[in-house]
Amino acid sequence: MLLNAVIIILQEVLEAALLISVLMAISHTLQLNLNWLKIAVITGFIGAFIYQYNLESISSAFDYVGQEVTNALMQASVYISLVMTVFFINRTVSAHQEKMLTVFMSLSVSLGIIREGSEIFIYIGSFIQQDHLSSVCIGGGIGAAIGASLAALIYYTLINAPKPVLLVGGQLLLSLIAAAMLSQATQLLTQADWLPAHGAVWDSSSLISEESITGHLLYAIAGYEATPAPIQLAAYITGLSSIILLIASKEWLKGKYQHA
Amino acid sequence: MNNLPTLCLALLLSGFAMAETTMITLDIKNHLFNPAEIIIPANQKVKLLITNSDNTPEEFESYELNREKVIMGNSKTVIFIGPLPPGKYPFFGEFNPKTAQGVIIAQ
Image (cartoon, rainbow over all chains, first blue to last red; front, side):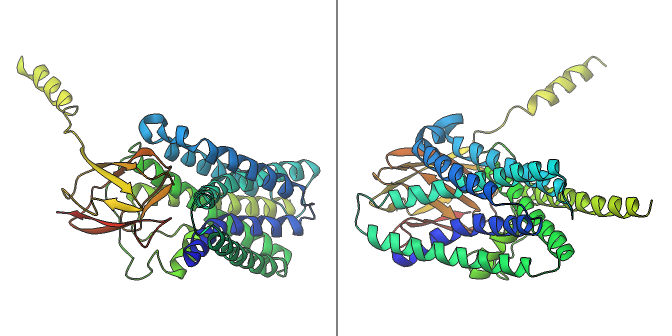
């Protein structure tokens, strides 16, 4: 039970932690203070508690697919917030850009914490009236610590890179995370039968199994799926190329104006 | 060609004559899935109606089916799966993986 708790909490924490570490690195290099993160964490945990408390009624909405619809909406919102975050990132940011950045970074993290945090509350909460509560808490703590360590590794790797590398690399990482959000949103809507399902485009589970450590890491960083549905793949590619196009346009426009 | 408009109308309306989606019920009790083995028609969308008869929540999860959902205690939910090519698709309860296990067989 302890090992199970480690794995479950680690999976939940990893996704949010990865996003937070990249945003923190960007925030650090642009010399923003961390108030956006503090607000995001507080609102995230409060939101997570409210969400899990009402999950039963939310879940039964829309003919029992309320959970998928709500989660898909949150994932899509994170995607949009990350697009806006990338939009406002620049080597030097004006006061206006700073303000917009903090709003969208905060929103992305907050929504992520609501989603992951609610599941953590539900999981640990389910053991309050059962045995194994202490081992679940210990396991959960270990899982969270592992997730935090991985996030710290990414953060320190990023902030020790030269500023241009950090900014472009960070934005590319954000693109991967954002595309994964969109892919997850479509998967949820397929599960809810709001979007058509047509089987899997490929099956790479023999190469990288989703259950393996590599699989879980790739899932958290880039939304890896061993058996993606066509519509998931379409959403991922569209989402990813849109942001990369945005990043490329910004770099091109910057170059253009510098030579003007 | 009086038959042409009728033919067009018939073709248009035939699109709405869809077959009923197969529905399968699954229950969770004492952290066990019942039935643990479910046979479904291959290459068709299937609706799973899952009831959680335990007091505690469970998370229905399957890597092969690409499905994942939390089901609160004493409640029910719906998950759509498929169309699946013939084969075996294991699923488990993430909160109690040692006991809550099952497999969906598409044939």
